Length: 89
Image (cartoon, rainbow, N blue to C red):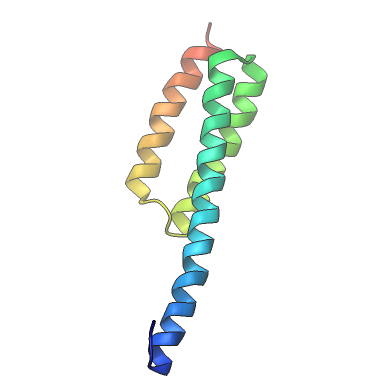
């Protein structure tokens, strides 16, 4: 355990930031899972709705520092291709 005041403060800040990052990561992964489930089985309207929500959450994750912008871009490109293949049938 930290002994100095500044180290105690940094430990508190780390706990807060870790909790925030974990919540944002969890929210993002849940949304990705929902989209992949919709692509696997759902109808085209549900897939489009889930896709727009997922893209929004990925962009927010980039803003909050959870994801790198290139990683989010790669996710969006791959998911977009899967959505397009599903909705064009």
